[in-house]
Image 1: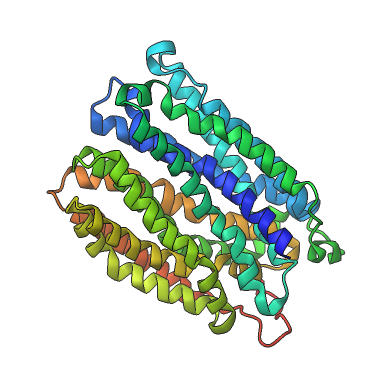
Image 2: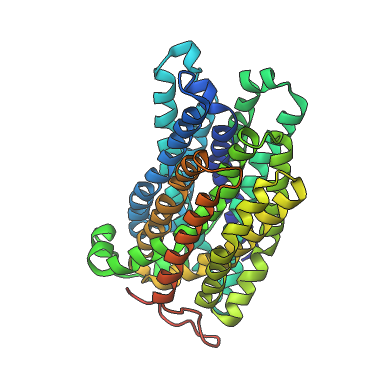
Amino acid sequence: MLRLAAASLAGTAIEFYDFFVYGTAAALVLGPLFFPTFSPVAGTLAAFGTFGVGFVARPLGSILFGHFGDRRGRRPVLVASLLLTGASTVAVGCVPSYGSIGVAAPVLLLVLRFLQGLGLGGEWGGAVLLTAEHAPAGRRGLWSSFPQAGPAVGFLLANGVMLALSATLTDAQFAHWGWRVPFWVAGVLALGGLWLRSSLAESPRFLEIDDHARVPLAEVVREHWRLVLLTAGALSVGYAIFYSVTTWSLAYGTERLGVGRTEMLACIMAAVVVKGSLTPVMALLSDRYGRRTLCLLGCTAAALWMFPMVALLATGAPLLMFLGFLGALLAFVTMFAVLGAYLPELYEPRVRCTGAAVGYNLGGVLGGALTPIVATALAEHSGRVPWGVGAYLTGVALLSLGCFALLPETRPVGAVAAEPVTG
């Protein structure tokens, strides 16, 4: 289990590194380089628009890779998704700017971002299910939290590279070539991930299935549509929190508040370190007290903290900004640490790879794709404190709270796992 969990964590970390490095670049440099004819705010909005395309592609990736995951196994999905995401990320680092090839530059950026999202849409389902379906029932939450910790590791890797470059290069060097280096590093990481995953065994739960779904998506839509919609609505707050902290606030702090990008990245990364370290703790609590209980608690905390978070951000003081980010990410991890166990337990095994991944990635469209764009637009028409952003995030948290309240508890009782709810 330890070897399997470590390989799953490494794989999700690498794929989320690819995804996050684009978000950081979008907040810092992509607007002026690829949309130079726009105003600064419009350029940032356009860059966040290409960022959002990755989220739109993720449900499509979950459908594509989920089909093969439910038909052919979880393991092949891990290899194919890692190859696609890694190759498209390296290619982003090679795209010439608008000044070199004109409108073809943002078009290429858009296509490659779509391919990134397509690969990541397949990654989560394969990695989480392979771990969850190997894990013993009484510790499924703990073992399934390893791939859930991958996004934090990927974010820290992506922003650590960006931070090092930002601190050592001049603004001109960073804009000219420095921002491309983290995208090229993705190629090396992808090769390492493929090596780690080459020896993984197929999920025993998948091998036990006698009657595989012929068209998993059709079965999910027909029999589990309500569960998919509730899952997507419930998870949207987590995405909204994470990308408001890690992407929108980075652009807001550097552009509107005049905080240096090094200071902003350091504040965000420090909060993510704490969040990542608490992932297994929250997962252990879910094994003891229940998945739904933790989700309801985290969602309530999010609804109460969004206004204080934007107020602390608006101060521009590093310590206060860190505290604001930390409170938001603690609410986030209380919910998302348990999802590696919770979502697979909600869906029956024959359509689990498709159903869990589609619900997870639809939540990304609702919360992740829209949040940087909506928050940037709302902040543009507010004073120094972007109360409109706080109101938007609170509204998303209340929507998710209602969806979590309608989902069942799935934590196995005793040593025997209860069969998952079928929708």
